Amino acid sequence: MSVFALLAGARCASEDSARAVSLATPPRTDEPLTVLTSLAEARAAVDTAAVSAQRMISIYTPDLEPELYDETAFLEIVKRFVLSRSFSKVRVLVGDPSRVIRDNNRFIAMGRRLSSYIDIRHMADPTPQRASAYLIADDRAIVYRLRADTWDGIADFNNPPVARLYLNEFDSLWTASAPEQAPHAAPAARG
Image 1 (cartoon, rainbow, N blue to C red):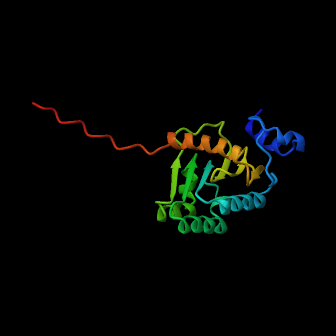
Image 2 (tube, rainbow, N blue to C red):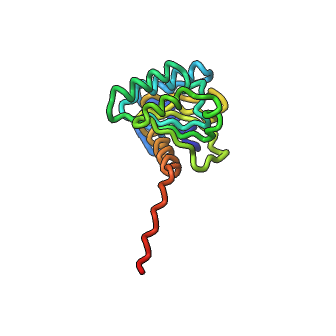
Image 3 (cartoon, rainbow, N blue to C red):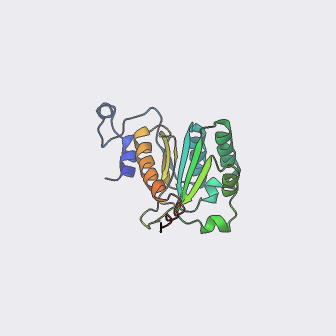
């Protein structure tokens, strides 16, 4: 069973079974799982999750989807987030940066101006089976789309176990996509 299925099924369990939490079923929270079926719903969910962030926003996207992340409302949320907290961070993993460069994305421009708060990396090894896209706020809220080419997905603004699971995946990909360090000069030979 996929984690997506677990997340979707987490809210369908009966009240009695919600008390017996296991690794297979994330604990029930008071906030409902939201099913996304349109661009408007995806935008609203991304904005809601981003507003809830206190420390970090992590975004995994194939091409920094301008329909979501190049919108004025989202850009204002991110700008307020990073400028109001000195310790805040936005990390973005982009699978294919060619569209980002070609489309002159405003998020990229803001990332250049606020480079100490916004870090954007190209995935080291984008694989075709990674067709998903998601945004994680801190280690609590997640907006997840199984396929980035549709707006169908889910949003859960208070599900730490699932958010942490995807945050761990994001962290692994982030580390693997770390910018290469400049090679060190070889020590001089002594004669």
